[in-house]
Picture 1 (cartoon, rainbow, N blue to C red):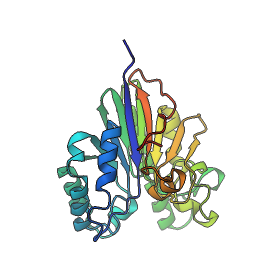
Picture 2 (picture 1 turned 180 degrees about the vertical axis):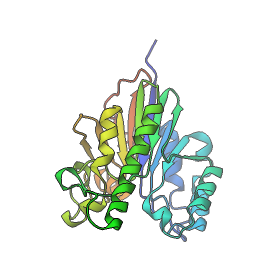
Picture 3 (picture 1 turned 120 degrees about the vertical axis):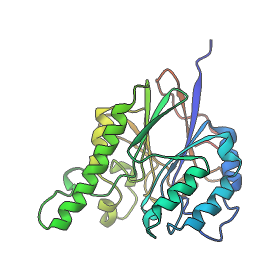
Length: 260
């Protein structure tokens, strides 16, 4: 019997805004034809407005009935202070929001958090000095702990991690050095190596690098839409991988009209 595979598509940073009605309708339709699961890696809308979320759900339309969609929030979802309403709209439209949560779909485990900035490696911001700095670092630590807890719940042969902020510096390379600390945190990498995953997807770094690896050799994909458009010109801006349900990840799927 042929081994069954699951096709997982991922894209982030759609930055959907008012006036964009219909902009992504064809993209969602193509992805729903090409993949079994779609991961949305935050900054789905632009100004954190409920109206943006409602318009986006019109674009998603029937695609949400044909393909399973999971998402994490990005920093833009918080801009207008209406994040609870936005979550409700997205959930009502058929999107599962992960915020320190884990779920199993088609035999594959998914864990997701927004993440937080703070820097990478030896340049990682430490909780020293003013209380506001300690609070900032505490938020990064809390997001890392949420990711670790979600991954620990999964008992599937394969795990996928879904983030907005980057867990490694390699996939933000290409951005101005001055903003590296605001693009992600190495604290997010620690649970990924502790509970090995088949792949990690994130967004946020629009001008970063499409892929890299954790220190444990786990592939990390930056799927910010602008980067995907630049990396795969003439093709829908998303990354698609194939993952056998046995848990042994295959290489990226062969190029097609909607694969990366």
